[in-house]
View 1 (cartoon, rainbow, N blue to C red):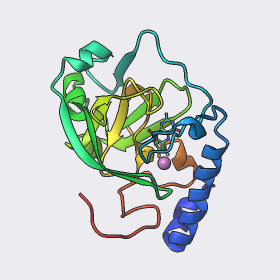
View 2: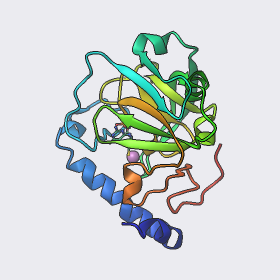
View 3: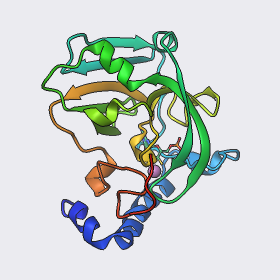
Length: 219
Ligand SMILES: Nc1nc2c(c(=O)[nH]1)N[C@H]1C(S)=C(S)[C@@H](COP(=O)(O)O)O[C@H]1N2
Ligand SMILES: [Mo]
């Protein structure tokens, strides 16, 4: 496992296909069985690394770690903040793609500003109420305009299957960075690897410029 990242640099697309099939295999084994039950998925594939995820009765999004003002937002609090809309292609690292998908929500940068990021922080860790998935970004990546705490997707509230009520949306990166069922944002002193990154995927997951791919420049 640990050598996989370095091997990716050398093996390129061949390794990419290999790790891609790991994700497909996990998705096929999805114990919820939902993958086959979504007739109008619109090109999306349902992913969950855990079984059925319970919808929270009282949704909260916490912001903590290396901040001056830790916060806990209810959904209504997030809805009351300025909303931003991005229309961009969704690209899963395994190959499927949904062009021109609208996402709308609060800029992650705005939540970071409100929290008052302390000087020792260099990264942001995301946790999910499925209890297992986690992701991370560097602080610079997290402050980009095209990174949203998304409340809407395809011009309607993010559905439970797509990670609602609130998911992360990292437009310039492969979709595994866009953590579903977002529940926590924690400022940390180092980047902590995400769930799939423990299996060899790149932590810096730029579309076309990571995971053994070197396509046309993006962003
Ligand atoms: N909590 C959580 N977030 C997740 C995942 C997951 O399994 N659990 N899978 C990731 C991957 S690999 C992809 S491609 C997208 C899939 O999003 P979708 O189910 O809305 O199509 O969610 C990403 N975020
Ligand atoms: Mo994915």
